[in-house]
Image (cartoon, rainbow, N blue to C red; front, side):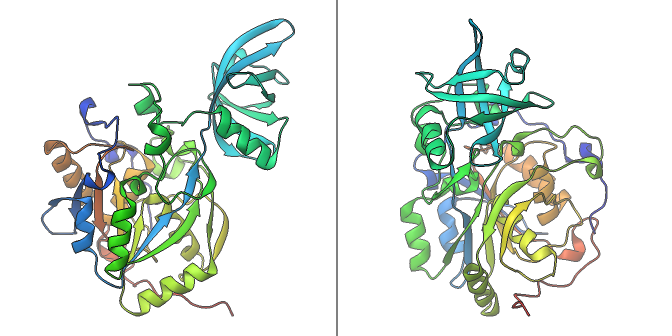
Amino acid sequence: MARAMRVSEFDFDLPDDRIALHPAEPRDSARMLVVRPDELLVDGHVTDLLTLLRPGDVLVVNDTKVLPAELKGARIRGEARAGVSFNLHKRVDAKTWRAFARPAKRLHLLDRLELGDDGSLLATVAGKGETGEVTLEFDLGGVALDEAIKAHGAMPLPPYIEAKRHTEARDTTDYQTVYAAVDGAVAAPTAGLHFTEGLLQKLADKGIGIERVTLHVGAGTFLPMKVDDTDDHVMHAEWGELSEAVVHRLAAAKARGGRIVAVGTTSLRLLETAARATGSLRPFIGETDIFITPGFRFRAVDVLMTNFHLPKSTLFMLVSAFAGLETMQAAYAHAIRERYRFYSYGDATLLFRAEQGRVRGSNDTRPFPGYSPRP
C-alpha cells in the first residue's frame, strides 16, 4: 500500500541545458535508457524496441489528439480593450472550458473576450478561480467550437519549452503523435512522440500487438507540487476510455504469455485505473485522478516506455513506484551524466516493473490476475 512520502525525496538537480527544445530527427532516432530492476542500465535507442520486445507483447498507445489550445485576444469592457491570452486545459461541457489566463488580474466575471487573430472567436468569463484559472463560456459549442479552436489556437507547448522559445510552425506536427485521432488533449502523451509509421509497421510485422486507448491529457500534468507530503496532493482529473474489445485482446495476450507495454504514463494511468477496483482489467470510461506513488500495487502493466520527467513531479513519483525509487534515482543520475535529453521533446526510458514486494513501501507480491468477465 502506498504511504505518505516527503516530496523532497523525489528531487534531483538537472542542468538547464538538458531540456530538449526540439525532438530528435527522425523521431525514432531518440536515445532510450533501458532500466531493469537490479541490473545494469543499458544505453540504447528507440528503434531497439524491435529487439527488446518479443512476439506476443502488446504496446498500448494513447490516441488522444492535442488541440491548439493557446488562444490570444482582447478583453472588452465598454470602450476599453486589454490584451490577454489563455491556455485551455479542461473541457467542462460543449461550450465551456477551464483555462489559465495571462494576466488573470485583468479579468472580471462577465467580461467579454474577442479571441484569435481576427477576434471572431467570442467568449465570456464565466468564473474565476485561484492561481490564474478562469472559466470561459464560448458563443460557439460542440464541433463548431472545436474547429474554431483549431483555426485560431496555437500548440500549447509545455512551460519549460515556452520559457525558452516561441511556438514554431513545426510544433503543429512535432507535438502530435503519428496515431493521434481523438480531439481533446491540451498536452501531448509525449512517449508516443518517438514513434514513426515505419517503426510501428516493423513492430507489427514482428508480431507485437498495438492497441489504442484514449486519455485526454490536461495542462494539470505540468502543475508543480505545492505540498510537502504526497498524501496532501490533490491530483488533477483527466477523461479516458478503455473499450471492452481492447480489454479482451489484452487479456488474451496475457494468457498467451505476452507483456503489456504502456507507451507513456497516460496509458499506464488509464489501465491501472481500469484494473484498480476489482484487481482485474475492466472496460472504463470517465475521469481518473489516480495518483501513483511508491507502494502502489500495479495490476495491469509489465513494461513502461516514458520520457524523463520533472524533479518532484507526480510523473517522477509514478516511475519510482513502477521501477523503484533508488533504481530511478540511479537511472536519472546516469542519464544526466550521459547527456540524455529531458522532458517532452527529449529521450525515452524503457522501464521493466520491479517485483511488487520490492517496490519501496509495498508488501503485496500477488501477480496481475488477468481479465475477469463481468458477471
